[in-house]
Length: 119
Image (cartoon, rainbow, N blue to C red; front, side):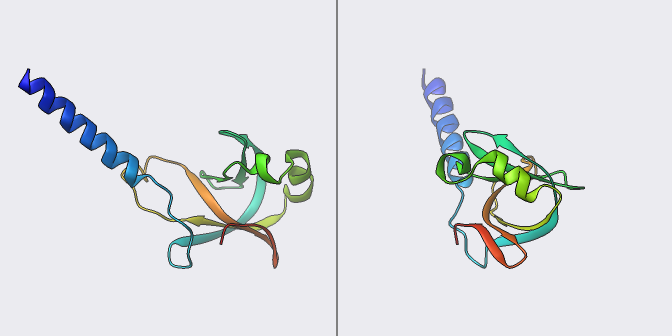
């Protein structure tokens, strides 16, 4: 019985550490990275997330709950597919970083106009 309790305790502890390590921090100038690229596709992902796919980039970039808050998918596609945007995402370290191919966006810019910002 005690081995079971120890095993469950270790499993719970490791699970909690993993969950806390994946929490997305607030964006700052020190923990963000900006990439520029041509928008190849924009679509809904997750739960009402707006997902941007750049040409020649395997990663996907998303605005969390973007379709719930302010954006319309049809309008975004008409306005930005084929255009170059600057996508700023939070570069935070967690145990699964190398396995996860998506990036939480903190800012989206077209030329010098801000389309979206959490900063």
